[in-house]
Length: 114
Image: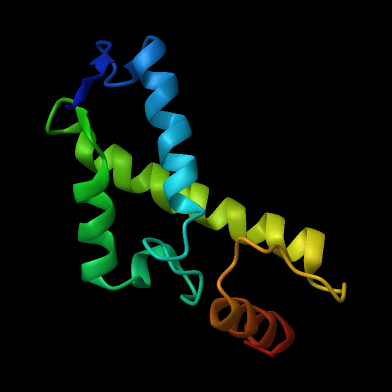
């Protein structure tokens, strides 16, 4: 069952449901199966992954809000990568939520000249 999310005149999500949506998007952005970390930017992620994420968002909202959802997922995904780099790059451990091959890709990318 989909949860209805209200928006205000500015197109911003409001109410308790908006908080649930934001929290869910953060969880989804940290899931390496749906949002793999081995892309330079979220916009480069395969259309299959992006469509899967769009399909899994079980919230009923204005169709115009779908673009906001993807932009929010991109930002949360990017912020997660920044957090991982800040917390783990120079340590011998890594966040166990990160899939091993994605972690190895991240380390190699961060240590490269890009």
